[in-house]
Length: 58
Image 1: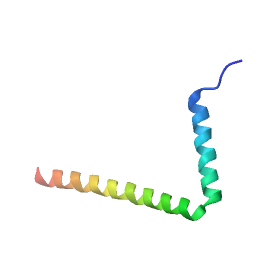
Image 2: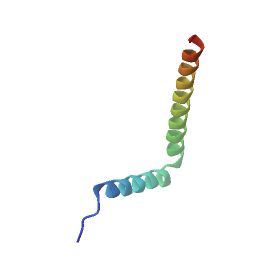
Image 3: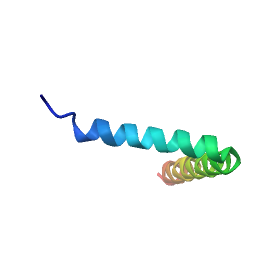
Image 4: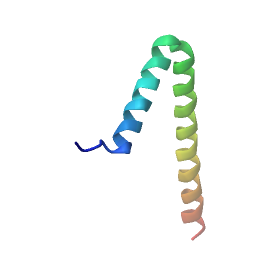
């Protein structure tokens, strides 16, 4: 008997928790996803602005 890797167990626990959170409170889950998406989009925009400013100065 080989034990499953801990990484696989943790991944399944995260998936189960996310499904539970979505099914029990979908509105809050959607708000969290929307905020996370906004944060990622803003970070990418800021990185692009940084490199644009860096290249314009050269």
